[in-house]
Length: 378
Image (cartoon, rainbow, N blue to C red; front, side, top):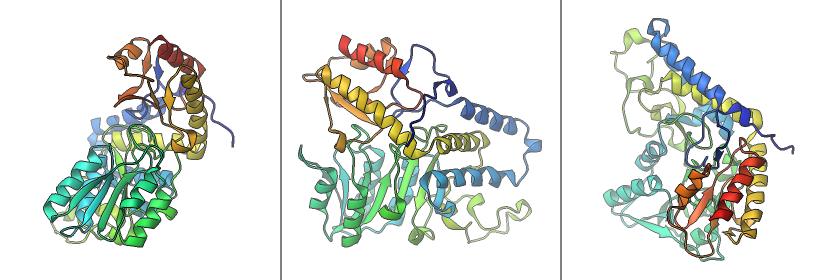
């Protein structure tokens, strides 16, 4: 498989900026910025915005998300955030008194708070799965899985340090005990492949402003077939059957648009955001998710090797995702390290006692050199 050559000219990243923080928020590519501007121009001239346009742009974005996830567009709902999609999952998965929900230690808050609320209302409980130093996340989860687990809510790589979760193994174990599987793929979709045919999640959500490289306020929710006749968390007009006919909107209907569309967020017909989503997806599909993962893995391996030579600690290659790298200081982390690095033009995230490095195809060798020189200066 050929690697992707550096794509920096496609992004408005100034010289002297080494941006290793895609896991925080991706920069918008020039093509995405142009698409957002074109969408804003449509809103500026509403006399040219036809009723069918409310649906056309949404369906293009739905198809783009489906192409990236390699699934049927009928499985995709358009959501504004990971928390929105997770709220839909929580509303549509049964939880009985005394049953448990499993989450990972240090999991992103949006994939914890919703389950705490769900458990509180149903009389269930949320259990945090920790792992031993030499233990995989999948092994730790399997130790806690039993017949009284109703929901397993995880990611396929940990947002804080990039450590992998073997979703195939976890999914098979969930099916064995009858537990639902909910995946937050915000930190992975678009940057590493996922086989939905193997994993078969009940729900999978991804906010699009990170590795999907789309505008903020966009995202997708995959809904398994058995849940597509479920209950949405809001009741807007455009998700109802027959909403294409604006002259008959007050002929109120109880049926919904087909597939997962009943779960679409309100005011989804937002051309700047939707056109930005499509432009970003086109770019990612042009590169190919497998090639993106392979390219970023080379970058993270090079950084890991050079950081280790400076005395930093990293996860073993087999335990980390290809696109996210966490490095630890051998002793205590210096105060204000993030600000110190930013002052040298190096942008990354401080997560706990680690530095999280999240490159993309816009990074070049000069960026890596700047990062290593800045780390050495600490």
